[in-house]
Amino acid sequence: MSDVFDRVKKIVIEHLDADADKVVENASFIDDLGADSLDTVELVMAFEEEFGVEIPDDAAEKIQTVGDAVKFISANAG
Amino acid sequence: MFDLTGKKALVTGATGGIGGAIARGLHAAGAQVALSGTRQEALDALVAELPGSVALACNLSDPAEADALVGRAEEALGGLDILVANAGITKDGLLMRMKDEDFERVLDVNLGSYFRLARAASKGMMKRRLGRIIAITSVVGVTGNPGQANYAASKAGMIGFTKSIAQELASRGITANCIAPGFIVSPMTDALNEAQKEAITKSIPAARLGQPDDIAAAVVYLASDQASYVTGQTLHVNGGMAMI
Image (cartoon, rainbow over all chains, first blue to last red; front, side):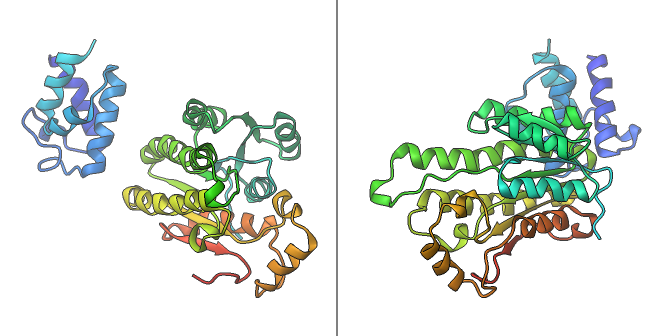
């Protein structure tokens, strides 16, 4: 779990140019980290690439926080 | 005037009259060019003429090949800054006699492949925060033309598609524009008889057919850094035959 969180955090920091200490489990990509709708699509694609997991559109819509992403990836990757 | 040194471009339909001129124009402005087409010999001849360019044989009517083409270009060139979706076909006929397959095939190749190429190219361009997507459409996509309902629909579709992706991608430094040629000298217009050519020329204020280089010049402009504030537009290059 923590490994997934760290890798997700790294991707989020890279893509959104976000402060590391703001990328916490309950941080919302859009409300807290300054992402726009295109950023969220890019993040989902980056997660898919990093973890070799497919994130369907209906699941992607529900991934709104860092924790949502970690939870989905932990449950579906590898 | 427009410097494309270091830029990497993919041109589809590069072995056609307009496609070849576009490839030469981009190359002359300094870009490294990947040339896509269905005829290997013609591609090889163009590669020999344009040092540093690469040939990527591809049949864009096959969705899997269309999906893969941008990746092949990125690998061969080390990235992709400029996509010129130029490949297109016609299957002319009057509505009452138009077969399903003639309609579907023209839509698939002209509009479908553009969608697949743009989707693939946008991923790398988004990451690099820079890109130029240029679609070669046609004046008939705006004016219509009897006997070309399928072709005109595909070309009008490309315009609407371009306007939509231009809005999606603008914040990432990517522009998407169309160029709409009028009557350009090509194997397609060579097939017309003298009477047809004369009738066409009468409808063009410039009183002549266009040259492939007229289109290439428009591509080089839209591909340049200087055109970074131009997006979602259709640039008509037609000697004034339609003013839209």
